[in-house]
Image (tube, rainbow, N blue to C red):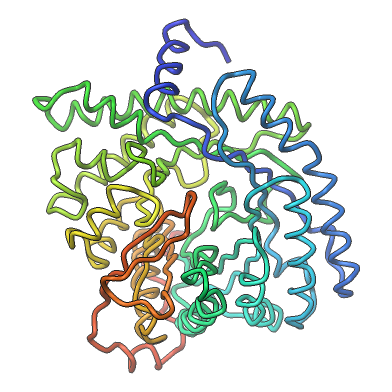
Length: 454
C-alpha cells in the first residue's frame, strides 16, 4: 500500500489535532482445539494457547505504533465462544476456565479479552445454561474477561425466555459489583445478528468461521470527522456534509489498514478486518454526539438526530468501503452514553431519553450502549427493553445490542462512575408502564418474513 505526501501530512494533522488513533488492535485466537471435558485440562490448554498466540503482542503493538507515529490505544484478544470450548454442563467448570483466561490476559498485557459467549437465539443447551449461570460470578471475579450472549437473529427470531433469563443475570451481575456501580454489566453485551469479527469490547468474540488466528483492527476518528465538518462551514448543505464525512472516513481507513497489515506481519498471522467504527471516548472533542452538534443539532436527542445519525453511519461505510476491501466488524457510529462527553451532557439535560436512543439504534452500528438505569428496575421491564432492541435488529437484518447497567441503589438523578474509557453516566428514567405479562409468556418470537431469503 502506497501513500502520497498529501495523505501523510493530512494523517499527521488528524493525529496531532483531532485525536485520530487506532482504538484497538485485537488478536483473534481460535480455541476449538482446546475443548476438554476435564475443566483443569481445558483451562490449562486455553491458557497455554493464549500465552503462545499472544506472545509479544503488547511489545510489537508498541513498536508498530512508534514506527508509524499513530497511537494505538488498546491491545485486546477475542476468543472462540466458550460455550463451544468447555463441553461440560457445570458452572464451576466455566468459572475455572474463566480465571485461567483472565490470568493469561494479564500476563500478555491486554486490557480486555472477549469470548465468554453463548449463542441461544433459538434455544439453549445444558452447556449454555451452565455458562450463563456462572456469568455473574465470572464478571465479578475477573478483571478483563468480557461476556456476550446472542438472543436473536433475523433467521431465528427472538428468544424471549433468553431475554428474561439475561435480565435476571444482569441484575445479579450488577449486585455482585455493587461497590463499583454495577461495572460487571459494562462487560456484558446482548446481541441480535452479531458479527464474528468484531474487534471492539465488550461484545467481541472470535467466531467459529474465522481462521486459526488473525488481527482485527478497530479505527476511530470522531474528532477528525468533526473537524472536517467545522472546516466545511455552516453554509454547506447536507449532501456536502455527507461527502466530507465520506472523504474523511476514506483517509482514516487507509491509515488503519496500514497498521493492521503491519501488525499481522509482526505476529505472523493473517490480517482479518478493519472495523471503521466511530467509537467515542469521554475526552472532550472525541465524540460522536459532537459530530451531530456540528451538523446543526443543539444536542443529541433533538428532532433530526436519527436522520443525522443515519447519514453519518452511511457516509462512514461508503468512505471505508472505497478505501479498503477488508472493511468488516461493525463499521459505523457508536452512541454509548457513558463514553461520549456530548451524550453525557444530553442525558443530564434530559435532551435524550432511552426511547430516543432506541430509535437512533435503528440506523447506527450497535444499540442501547452503556446506559445506566435505576437499580430497582424489574427484571420484566429490563427483559422488555432488551426484546425491543432485539426486534430492531431482527426486522432490519442488522446488528443491534444491549449493554445496560441497572445501577444498584441508584435512581434517576444519580450517576455511575466507571473511569477510563467506560466513563460515567447519569441514571436515566425507564417507563413505569408494565410489560410483565408479555414477558412472562415466554417462548420465541418467530423470525420475520424477511428471513425467508433462500
